[in-house]
Amino acid sequence: MLMLGCGWLLYRANAQVSYQWNWSVLPQYLYRFDEASGKWLPGLITQGVFTTLRLSLWSTILAFVFGTGMGLLRTGRSRFGRMMGWGYVEIIRNIPVLVWIFIFYYFISDQLVRAIPVDDYLRNAPEAIQSTVSFLVAGPSQISVFLSGIVALAVYEGAYVTEIIRAGIQSVDKGQWEASSALGLSRLQQMRYVIFPQAFRTILPPLAGQFISTIKDSAIVSVISIQELTFQGMELMAATFMTFEVWITIMALYFLICLSCSLSIERLERFLKRKTA
Amino acid sequence: MKNLPRLQKQWLPSLVMAVLIAFFLSGLALAESHESTIDKAMKRGVLRVGMSTFVPWAMKDKTGQLIGFEIDVATRLAKDMGLKPEFVPTKWSGIIPALTTGKFDVIIGGMGILPSRNLKVNFSIPYDYTGMSMVAHKTNAAGFSSLSDFNKPDVVIAARLGSTAVTATKKYLPKAQIRMFDDESQAYQELVNGRVHAVVGSAPTPAFQAIKYPDKLFLPLQANFTKEPIGFAVRKGDFDTLNYFNNWIRFVESEGWLQERKHYWFETKDWESKIQ
Image (spheres, rainbow over the protein chains, first blue to last red):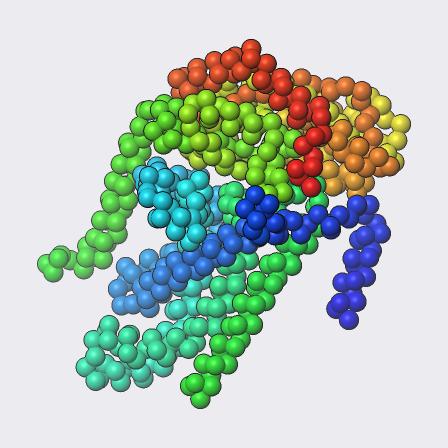
């Protein structure tokens, strides 16, 4: 039914909008054969996919670090810590992500980049380091904007991770705290041996969902000209005027990436359930 | 700490944090150096050039390499300085703030010299002139053949956000409605779909679009209706850099190199096979 509906919509759109479809030139932007080196190389769009994946991965890791720190503060005993955690979550959650990315890029990251010129460090670094960093993060021309993109996204997603961690810790029964305290464990030991292992099971599924969210949210950093999937697609449209083909391809790619992530998370959840049952 | 009253104990950490942050920010503000952009680029060995995709000024070919008139200009400029060019593709609507906050050294991106823009950045002498041209929809704008035909409240014009096309449309077609898009391709798509009457854009793209869709689009005006000088944009207060760029432009102009490149990109379509 759904497929039929989509097909009908596409047909209607096609009939009403006069557009010269030109799918045949699209594959060369995904993969192309380089005659000079005799190898298959990733095309413009595929490069964008890699950048999107790198961006999402690093910002999720960083968001997890921020979120764990803030989540522990929020559930901690220090009032200052609780207030900091609360302030962080409330400030970030009540700003539109687009506005936050702009503010971060133009005001905060500008100061940071000026204080620590990462791109110059990287340019002066030996070849081996340069190529490793280019492979894992970004090349010297993109590194500073890429880093600010990662941090901006991570701070944003971190607010949601904070809430996930907080909910996870608070979902552990109060008796567990009391029992472990009665055993003479320190607060750190309680957290490490008793509370966190139990909280982890509740945390994992929403955390994985947050990772998929990050992949989708990463499209928004195209506004600060990070060359990820959406940006590359828009550049390609500007150069070739193939608006529809490129948007449809981008949509399909995001869908494939997110779907495969979501399926692997489902398997992981089932695996964990079996292990603990 | 132990002897402090309870209230102070609570607020001390936040006070310390605030002082630290204030120190950090003021230190950063002072750390700004007064070296010229050219000196910094020479030290770095790389000239960072801000640009945005505008056919045929700058665009990506099928191998992912940037090509176009501006790319040729910037590559030659960097070569003459003994530097490597590094292109930073940037959204057009945010390109001036990106320059002023130091994301790159210079904008070489077909930027029209406008008095209002000149208040924010410095421009080199013009290395090129462009003009606004217009392509219209055959049924929506049937019979339109002059600017006054388009200057009506029920006419909708599409243009790229933040470009001089918007300024030109507001000046020459004050009564028409303007619909602005982030990319030129979206504006042209809107026209092909028949939702607007015409697109105003820098020549020669409107003419190329009319050739691409001969049964839908046509060129209502015989000639461009504006003439705009195009210059390099640099940050304010950096006259060493500006002086170098001005004289470089004079140099390549008297060589005839600029005109030759211009002919290749704007008057021929030999480059089209590189894109598709």
